[in-house]
Length: 242
Image (cartoon, rainbow, N blue to C red; front, side, top):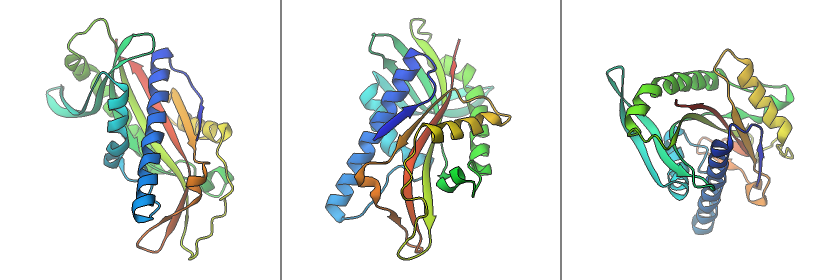
């Protein structure tokens, strides 16, 4: 595994998000190895939709945080809604922070890096835009939930997780970019395309390059199609909740 970071929001946030990505990778490998060993199937746990990300995020948050809750109910302008995750985190310098986190999950086709396809789909941008609205709506409700702990820094985070793949409908599958190893230049292209849109800026990002031998395989689906995965992009908008 290689993790490449692009932005450092601040010391506390950077440490938290970087550790979260490392834990995400750890639990991904555990799943992949165990499924391969037990039933000889190559299965990637991070390619499902947003709700499936709980498989990896919940144990990761529990490892990192003093306390964590999922689907936390809050009131916003008189309406009931839920925060995906709330975490209380103590960093390596014993500073405590509270994070209110919304998660989004979409996909990037690796062909977009080579000029054959749009890098960010309209659906991805719509999901990011929706998440920004949710982030704004958290401001007052999150304050109520945080129990007025004046000693803890408080943050709202929108985190999008984007597996990067290539599809094939041939059998056996043929992947045009199978030798691609994602690096900082690919990270910058995704980050810059997000921030070129008329949306609230992404201010933290990193990329896991799936270059380990275990990822040389590909996913097989019941409809006869195949997918190979090259990496996972993580991008966040982080706002301190003053």
